[in-house]
Amino acid sequence: MKKSLLFVAGLILAISFIRCDQTQEIKYSGNPLFDEPFTADPTAIVYNDTLWLFTGSDEQEEGVDGFLMRRWYVFSTADMVNWTNHGAVLSVDDFEWGSHNAFAADVVENHGKFWWYVPIVHADPAARVHEGFAMGVAVADHPAGPYHDPIGKPLIADTTANSIVLNIDPDVFVDDDGRVYMYWGSWDEVRVVELKSNMVELAGPVMNVEGLDNFFEAPFMHKRGDIYYMSYAAGYPSRTEYAISDNPLGPWVEKGVINDVIPNSPTNHQAIVHFKGNDYFIYHTAGLPNGGPFRRSVCIDKLEYDENGLIKKVVRTTTGVPQIK
Ligand code: FUB
Image 1 (cartoon, rainbow, N blue to C red):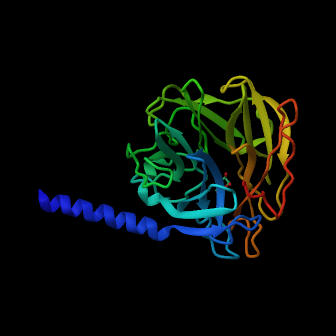
Image 2: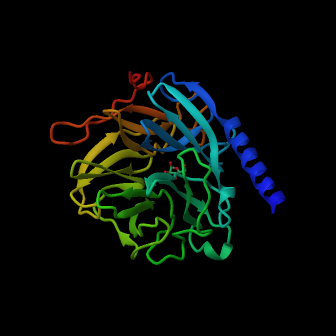
Image 3: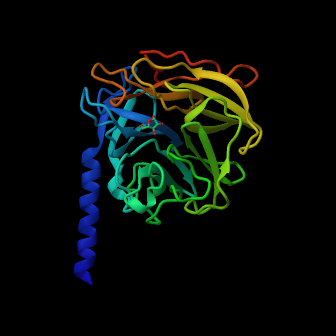
C-alpha cells in the first residue's frame, strides 16, 4: 500500500515537473502575438484576473500543404503584454478514441472546472461514416491543466443523429441561467445541442441553426447585456461575419462583417473576449515571415461596439493592443 502511494506521489511530482518545464515567459511585441510556436484557432476565457488563451498548433513544414495538428497550447497574461506559455498541455493522445487532426477547440469554465471541447478524427474506422471527425471533452481543475477525458468517448460523431458531414469547431456557451449549449459547424452547416449541466452528456436532440448568412465554419457565441452575438467564418476564403439574437437558439439577425479576408490564409478563426474593461478580437493570420495557410499565428486587436451594441469592423494592426496598466 505504502509503495503504491509513494509511486503515485512520484508520478504526480514528475508530471508537475514536466508541466513546469514547459512554462515559458514571453514578452508580446505586436501581431502576430508569438514568434513561435505557430498557433491557430484561438479561444479565450477570463479567470482570476488573467486572460487564458487556448490555441491549436500548426506543425506543418514550410512549403508542404495540409494541416499537421496534434496538440493544443495554453497561454496566459494579466496585462496583454507579458505572456506565459504553459505549453502544449492537451493532445490527440489524451483521447483514447481519437486519432489525428487537433482542429479548432473551445474552453469554458463551469462548476469550478475547465472544460476543453475538441474535434479529432475518430480512431475507429467504423465511426467514420462521413469525414470521420468526432468531438469530445477534457476537464481540469485549473486552466493550465492537467486535463483528462472524463468519459472516454466523444459527445458527437458522424453516427450522431442530425450531425453534419464535418463535425468540427465546437463552441460551448454557458448562459446566465446555467443552461449549456454546444454549437459547431463547417461547410455551410451549423448545429446546436444542449448539454446537461454535467457538461459531458447531451441534454436533447441536435438542432439546425438557421439564419447565419454565408456561414462556413467557426461559430463563436458571446453575450453582452441581453444580446447574444454569434460570430463565424463566412465564405471561403473566410471573412468574419456576425448575427445577433435575444435567445441562444435564435432566430438570428445578420449584422455584417467584423473582419475581412486575411492575406495568405483562407481561415482566420475568431474569438471575442471582454477583459479588464476592454473587448478583444482574437484570430489567426499567416503573418510570420515563414507562415502560411498551414503555419498560422494568433493575433489580438481591439473590438469595439457602437452605441446600439453593434460590432464595428475590426482594424487589424501589427502593433496589437496596449498594455493594461
Ligand atoms: O485549424 C483547422 C481548421 O481550420 C479549423 O477547425 C477551422 O476553424 C479552420 O481554422
